[in-house]
Image 1 (cartoon, rainbow, N blue to C red):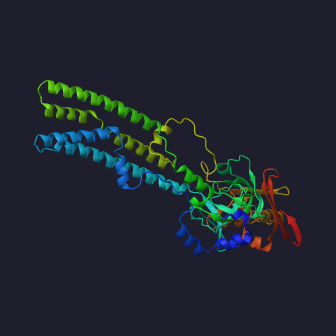
Image 2 (tube, rainbow, N blue to C red):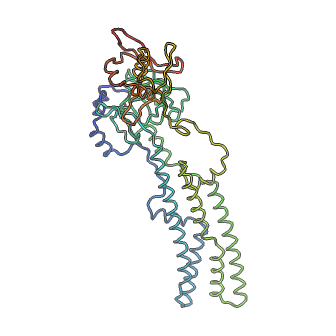
Image 3 (cartoon, rainbow, N blue to C red):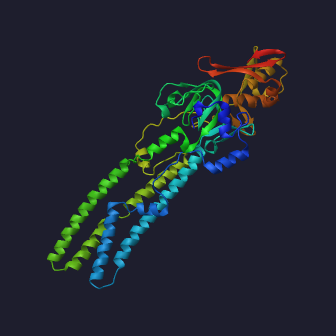
Length: 443
């Protein structure tokens, strides 16, 4: 549907949701069960156990071993010996190595999935009129997203409340400049993706401002999902290690085949007979081929992946561990990586006086109470038990309010917000308008 071309009432009706209260928990659970998680489908190309197992045979040296087993079987059968021990041993080695490879890959992927759960983004939504922070993959069509500066936008949505919102959409539209948003106006049906100012797009970030949007598409139905569909046809490139191993295997196999051919010819020339010379050449091939090479490499990489998993490092591709070993410098942002992204108030200063945070609750000061009140009202954060929702600076001010004996929810009911100017980098502050003591105050 062309959501940017519809009025807000039509959008709410089509999505069967309330723009003021969002979906009820029951509605959200039902839609999640019907439509699935809000995530992009990834086809790893490995499939189930059987497909993974057969993929282990996609190696020239392994195929060479199977060929040697087939030759050994044929010679034994041709000579009427019915002694297939050699063939069984060769096949047993190949099967054992393949099973080991599948097991190690599965272990590495389980560690990766566990880390993905830890690193999954969160989203703030309205559920039954209550603000909640949920995993982004649990967002469903019809949810109301509460957006603040710095938030990752996890789904496509139609904006219905806007306070100076600017988003970074270069990953989707290719536009490097920030996109200014608006909640009003019906855009023409043919409006291109980059000009849909009343929409937010999954995979973008809110650079500044704040607002609300109702989710119109999730997962593979988003604009980012359409890009993912196109990418499914792209072939995965081999890592440097894979290319080196493939090249080594081919060269080694050619040398082994050449040596075996010479040995076979010498055996026939010395009167061993074709059957005896062939079995001797097969035995030489089996002894010379490093059939455990792929398993040893897989085990080594799996051990490296597991060690890195313990350090909370996500490895997407098992064989990329070797490539990562060549990295000398890693650049990372500090917040959430080296720190907990949780701030606390240490001191309060006003009118020439200074208070320690732990003394504020017992201080008899009207100016201090005004400071605490201003910090709680000019604030978009919220506290839900031990969960802090919102900007770390704002949640720190709310925690300070509670430590001082106040309650931000009661203050907000007593002095509701009449208007606001969201934080932006030019003004370097956020302002909210309230009625306090019979007069309008801008905090």
